[in-house]
Image 1 (cartoon, helix red, strand yellow):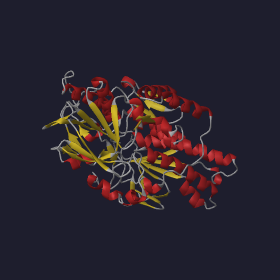
Image 2: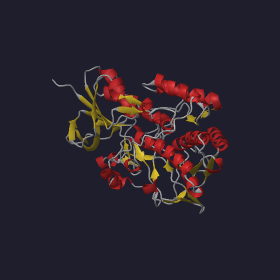
Image 3: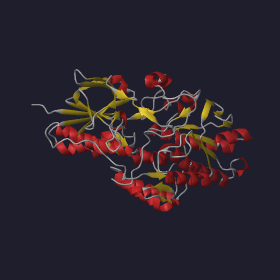
Image 4: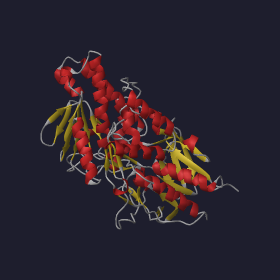
Length: 474
């Protein structure tokens, strides 16, 4: 008699934890299949450090086959779910189609960049949701500073050394904080080499958001700490402000000011993966509707969690859990328990989680945190943040700690590899975890398609929905 097959789609926080928990519960009694485009789990909270040259890419890329014993990995992007036949279809990295039948299905497909209907943004901005985008940004920043230092035209040099980040949630704040330190380090290296920026100026970073403060979704004390650190470092923070239009020469702000720049970094939040709506089941703002047990109504064999699922928040009746890494990780464990319970292994339990605190990485020795509601800042918050990340990482802990130590005593490396080109990381993509070939990038608008936008007018998200938050405990 063949074993029952449990198929998990997506290996983000929720999918990874679901696969790991199920493998430990069944110990070979059921076939556990994980379908994911890549063979690694990406630890998103540390991605800004990859873009800023603090960590090497593989440090935050945890091998799936190396850490998930008893789980069969299938490389591919799922492009269809047949609920009647209980099977999924997918396309592997070489473009070949395949299908998998399932007895239980766990959808943890995550989210993609959220777009707003602002002229020029899709063409000239780049997001920050996957490893290809982080690697592109790291090379792009290095290249722009090098070209700015070499230019004899003051206006061109200023434009190349100006970086605009839209969205002051978790991701945007951390990208701006780390990016400013990175470019300052690069500029100083050029200066020591006798080829500094014109006037020996430092690169300019701007952080924009339509919200009245940075980190609007967090405790105001953390927001004030982040704002203070950023402004002291030289980041031009503008709240209640965003982009009206983007061009190949720069961005036009709401107040009519034009900023000459070659770097527009889009961090306004995320939207659920378009696959959710393509399945055709009831959804809430693109997120699949589930009950408190993470089960899809009328389809007891289908479960969903993470950013792709509208999970009832039992701590706030009438609301859904936020699209954060903290919830996704815990929902992954909860859904595994409930899937196991459907086979008679234990009892199912509703998902309920109280936030235990958050951390925000502000680069260097600076951070903001509130473990158990206690506000911390500076080196103490930084120590709490790094301790949490080392504990939460499912692998590569020693390597990450080693990179942190090396960064504290050695200068950043001013070298670009050029492996990820601009056209391979389109903002409008249904799969930001992959670098796309030219022909696919050209049709990116069609592939992410109908996800659409939730608002019109200016950009800049008041709540960086779906940005991976950093719980300080648990």
